[in-house]
Length: 55
Image 1 (cartoon, rainbow, N blue to C red):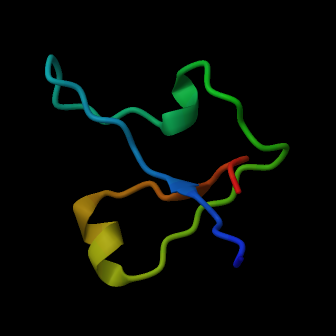
Image 2: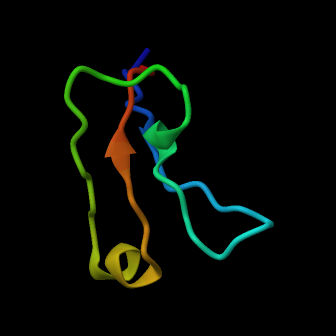
């Protein structure tokens, strides 16, 4: 099969309006976190798309 690279996005809260970075919580993080913004819409929505250790 093909390799599927999994990306992560910001986390939202029902208690605050502030988004959290995915890696602000104790998840396994890659050695180097790379932002993967792909288009203008993601930037305007405030998405924080980053790489993950999951393949």
